[in-house]
Length: 170
Image (tube, rainbow, N blue to C red; front, side, top):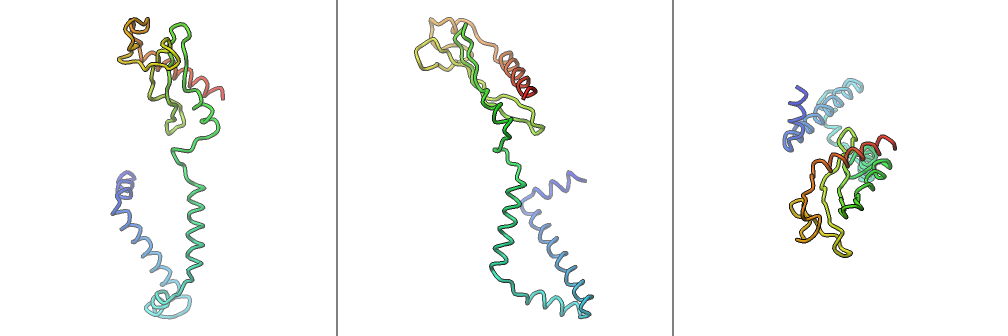
């Protein structure tokens, strides 16, 4: 049942229909309460509600308050905690023996657990600019790193293990 309601609510058209229905029900309940309290007919109370004049400044204030609360409660994927920002700085590793530089992006699961993505290897033995590996090998024919292919899965596993270790220690 919960999944069905969430599916309907995420639908761009049905969510607006449901929202209008909720506002209409609240308005009708308000009119009914006013008619009972003031001891007037329902139609008279409804007409008073429809004739109600609201200053524009009040509407603007309500909109600004709404936007402020929404901004405070927002959990945006682009916002990271200080702990996450520190961990995102761990995004490269150089193997001095082989001259291979690894770079990656650090991201976080919904449960805040870290993982890496976009792991890329570079050969640093050919001048100042690192060369990106092609098919897990250095693209320069005579290079030592062109002879042996790197195991990307094993390297990713090692880096994520280091990342989780750093995450647990911070």
